[in-house]
Image 1 (cartoon, rainbow, N blue to C red):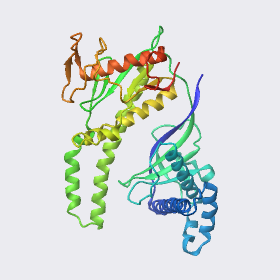
Image 2: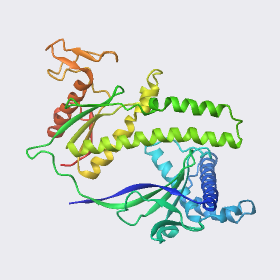
Image 3: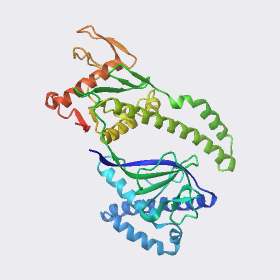
Image 4: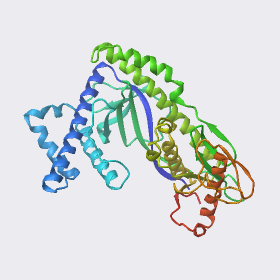
Length: 393
């Protein structure tokens, strides 16, 4: 039986000059409302120990629009402004539930967003093409459709990145059927060891190399940044060159995302139970020599996408505790041989003399304890050592 999920679909949009001007004004108002509401919440809490809710801020925003100094807030659609307050409310909820850092003020130098819901947007036909209508927006916005939407979207978010590119994200409800088991006589398990030289090593012995997206674009990025340093900051030439630099970074980000999407989809298609380690990426990035490579690998993004897709398609994701000695334990006899430097890529067990590839051995250990967790959760000795994120059983 299928289950309903909410999925986001992202497309490039190409607003004309007048529409870009309207979007710039909307982005600025949304950013101002978010920062204003954040300041109000912080001031009320520190001075009066009062917690302002979304309803409180919404009524104050209505009064703020009537003031002479801020009447310009009425020039844009009210829906994105209200959604900015909801976004702040959600940001604080994520902070209190330890899912995110404390909300900070938004800057015009980062990505600019505006979210539309309800009747503030819809998709209309014009000249046999589907285009996007936004509230208070002159005309219809051109969209490059790469696929059809499964249902009527409940919201859309228009974004402008630092490279000057516009995108729209639609949130749609979709019916997803769970994937059938890969084996008729049981479950198929795979341990996934994340690394730098090999981005992913599977307990089956397969190694997925690290594409090193940043290194492949390093020379081009160096040239573009060198050209940027020669421009007068703030000039038109500097702004054009800044966008060229941003496009290189955006290309790296897009390629990484595409690779991870395809990799995680293949893992979910091929295996019933996937076991990964709960890596402390922030702590590991304290190492100066490896911080850059760890940040570019996208380990956290891989785990997040596996978690989402396992929930969608009825697979099971087991997250092992970060203290589990996957690299120190012999996958043949279980003997723990102690810590090993990162440059030790192969080693021989001192008890059973089995020779191991470091990454494959770690992946096998993850797969084996994942099987123990699924079939006999009480046999681990440490019931909090593993967390079953999604279940397809």
